[in-house]
Image (cartoon, rainbow over all chains, first blue to last red; front, side, top):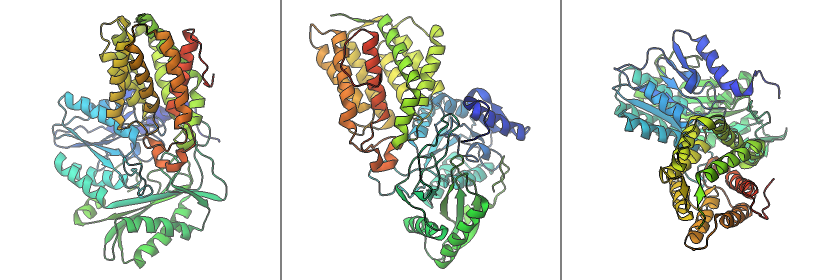
Length: 331
Length: 220
């Protein structure tokens, strides 16, 4: 696998330095702890909204730092949660009298490192709360429950909470908002190829030219089923049904519809997928108020997609429509 | 009864560090069957940092050393391995502060504290196919021998290594219920758990280092 890499061990720091150099004046970079943060945060009038997980999901989360989205991000190595100390330093750096909100995707490593860091930050008197995002319907019937995974739906939690925090919303109200978004968002993904973390140099799993992985997670981990490749429409039909029936979404609902690329699928194919998803949503009586087609939460260069539906209300519609100024202008 | 000295603990830590470094790729391969293939890298990054900072660590007591090791891990290891191994060293270190020798009874209590710490942090229980399915039987064995007046740490190491080796095959058919492996459901069936293999590989290397004969099926 050919990649643009200097030293695999420096892959993440060099990406972060690139993000910093592309946003000088707006963002700051603390190389010691892999932190990218807003130059104008923390602020005594605003809750700081932060997130950190493994790298390799860009633009999530480190490229979504900026006014109206995240105030700071603390990425770990590719597909590995950030070490506890990075999380703790991120909380301390973003300490505000209004509090700190940590958004965590539901993965064991992310939860454990952030849980430890939050305990230590609280011991230092910092007002910090966390919220776990778990929008993936792929593992819903699994008996292996620490629950569902957090996937592309995290974008809507970040966007809504970031926009609300910008308006001066309290930590308690932001937590309620995060709960509301998470309760109304559902996702599921399909992978057509594997992906290769630079430090490993080999694909994370093998998959045949005629196969697809249904229900894949965003860390390259295998999904719930290996199947023969199908047409774009047939794939959308399966994941749309799984997502729409889960909430369930009902005729008359106002929704945001996202077709997220996993990194290696071109925009043309994503729009072929969006076409079918939009037709299905319309046929089901859903009113697509906002749509998102592109790479939001990826697995390096994996070819694949995920479909996310978010049920909206007036508050969420306004928050999604609010401006966000981030390193990658996906909104 | 023969005691375990600070020098023994130092040798043991450097031995398992060497195990983690030389098996980095192998542990990643094991993690790729049902996990996300980063276990070897995570473990090696922590033990590599311990090796690099070895001289600067606090070597005044067993507990002081273990607590410093916990801090190095918390700083350098992300993923699931950082909190799990960091917590284990922290709990064990907290019980051996200011001690330059420990008995098997102390080791029993330190292992118990480490196991409880791992359970609190990750929520795993016996039977979830995690490294606890190796550590808990090892602790039980240490506990059993700690009560014997003629117990010998070398003999306990030999027997504990057999327990660690046996845990690999015993748990192999199980379905993982914790960590990223849980998400792949039945795919974790019939693949050895990387954490359980790592414990066994470390135990086998400890036997070699301390000159204890063992008949284990470890990789090396």
